[in-house]
Amino acid sequence: MTATTTAPVAAPSVDTQKRQPSGRIRAWATRAPLLPALIFMIAVTQLPFVATLVISFFDWNSLYPDARSFTGFGNYTEVLTDAALRKSVWVTILLTVSVVLASLVLGLGLALLLDRKFRGRGLVRTLLIAPFLVVPVAAALLWKHVLYNPEYGLLNGLLHYVGGPQPDWISNTPLLAIEASLVWQWTPFMMLILLAGLQSRDHQQIEAARVDGASNWQVFRYLTLPHLRRYLELGALLGSIYIVQNFDAVFTITSGGLGTANLPYTVYQTFYQAHENGLASAAGVLVVIGSIIIATFALRVVSSLFREEVSRA
Amino acid sequence: MTATAVQARPSTKSADPGPRRPKGRGLGLVAWLAGIVFFLPIAWMALTSFHSESDAATNPPSFAAPLTLDGYREFFGTGGGASPWPSLINSTVASLASTLLVLILALPAAYALSIRPVKKWTDVLFFFLSTKMLPVVAGLLPIYLFAKNTGMLDNIWLLVILYTSMNLPIAVWMMQSFLSEVPVAIIEAAQIDGAKLPTILTRVVAPIALPGIAATSLICFIFSWNELLFARVLTGVVAETAPVFLTGFITSQGLFLAKVCAASLVVSLPVLAAGFAAQDKLVQGLSLGAVK
Image 1 (cartoon, helix red, strand yellow):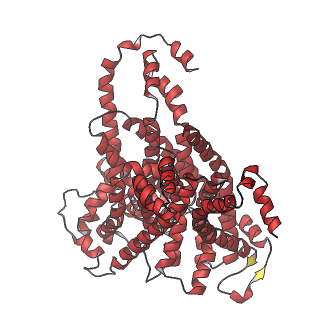
Image 2 (cartoon, each protein chain N blue to C red):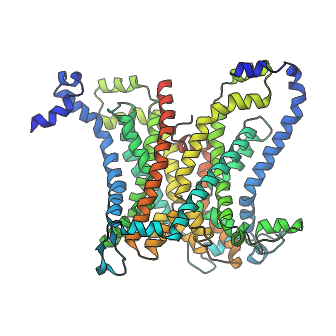
Image 3 (spheres, rainbow over the protein chains, first blue to last red):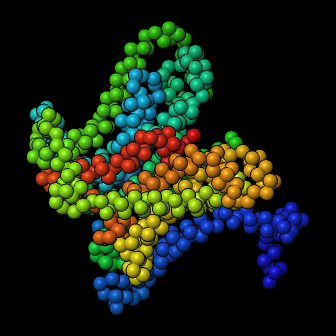
């Protein structure tokens, strides 16, 4: 028994063999501080997911606990053929892509503005960060009641002064209403990351290009933008992780109505209101599969950033 | 490549710095305008919270209406209605306790990953990050069923554990990047002097990495304070958090506009204050230390 446990440890390098047994003890001493966090994460995040996976193969409505039965992939076929659920997949993609792109573009514009020196720059920066620091539910309430309300909301109030129309924003363009509130919240985040990127540019290089007669656009296109690429990727990645999972805005502004239910909201509704445990789990597993696809791409981006940092050190 | 692009242009623009100045000022004005537009909803929310309900619900908006504290009196329950205090206290307890637990777990882990690299340490780091990409909804149902069967439903400590798992990956990543800046020589010197891990962490590493640890704590606190989905599903009457209390306003109509504004502002205040105080650290932390 000892032989089998030693073999894989000693095999990779001759180095550890020489220092045994103290080498192995030291190896464990090195790993030990890592273990509590690792065990905690596995217990709290991986175990429930395994349970979700198991439940997804059962036909199980919590209102009829005795009628629980194994259905194999039954829940999955039901989820995939359900028109409402397929729609929520589409809504999730649309919501994530549009919000991430819009906030990246706006954030880039604002970061470029703030990169220049002007009077009161610190104060403007603080004003611009504020939307990101409002509690998400509070921000959603603000947009729903204070801005969008057709009768006394600020948007229609301002339109009134110019004699414009008085639309019912949430009823007319529900998804756009949610997207606008999310873009408002996430633009500051993108701006902050891109501003950090702009300020880490090599200014000597830019000066040199200017002396050579490069125009503002040429400096931006051939120096700034390539340098910002990693920061844009990082912003898009982190933004997607959070916006794919968005629940607060959808729940608060439309309660998933008017065709705005995204996947997290649909899963929540399927088990919390419809009590369909098996169906909700299958939908949850599909969300995970989608996320894994994004994540494999995303992790590659992060690891390239990360390698760069290690090589710099 | 850059050189050719640059040389293609004749250098007639050398006298540029002078005429460019007014254009710079114009862009400064554009920045100011953008700042005001983005802040306007918050400013309007603050103003409305100090209006009476009837002044709040007018079209066109009344900018010069008299100010009153009625919205805040209503929100804090002194004008009738449920008091938000239990939910504010629950949020404070859950956020602070989980932040503390995150620090206790993440500090040694980040230490192992940055100062004494474990074999395959990047794999371990990526495992932590990958849990962040596991959507919350993927584990919500089993956690709900578990809580229901063990009587943990509507219990603030269940939220503490879940918030810890939510923030631990970010904290390990952030602190790993902050701790990497601690010179290894100092730690080795302490080890030669016979210092054990807890002493090294508290006496040597913590003081140097303190700003980073503070930033990490701040971000964990903010995320816990903001969280809605777990709290909404797993708490009810006793353990209700501030965001769940806010969801009570989802269907409220114009009669309570000042109250909604006061509530949103009060609940956001800790996050706004903390975020303004640590703007730079916030970026560094939110980008997992990748942006310095």
